Image (tube, rainbow, N blue to C red; front, side, top):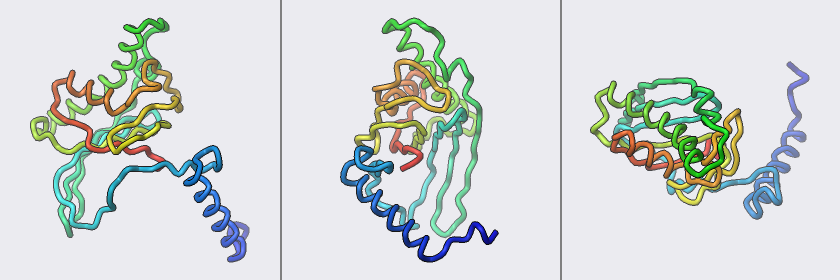
Length: 194
């Protein structure tokens, strides 16, 4: 294990190098640094007084997770979750056609799938009518313009669904949630690496 230990001098150099890249990223994004330093638009950090029930959706890799959490100050958070793999037909769209209609079908297929999993989970847990605050983690590169708006820049991790690049993924999700008959709006979008 000794070969993995770093001297204080090496740690200071790494710290300085990282800070320099963070500063460059804050000034000019990826044009100036390998660290984009993207804004999260989160207005404040939690202070321990938060309470209530919340829903989280996490689409990362090929997995989709839906989770409810109940938070009370001074108590351990209570959670309930469902994990599933996203079917490859959903990840890659259903057609090679490039028409406007088939592009809509492909993009809506992905978000309709997410909304269906969310809706089924909420119905099963007896929470479908509660309109709980919903956070959405979408682990793909997006240009985020507010806490509830993010445009997909490109797909990674085996996704190739057409009709999503250049679109606001929060809007696509909310449209699909409405089509599924669930009355939730996305309160917060989170890019997993911010």
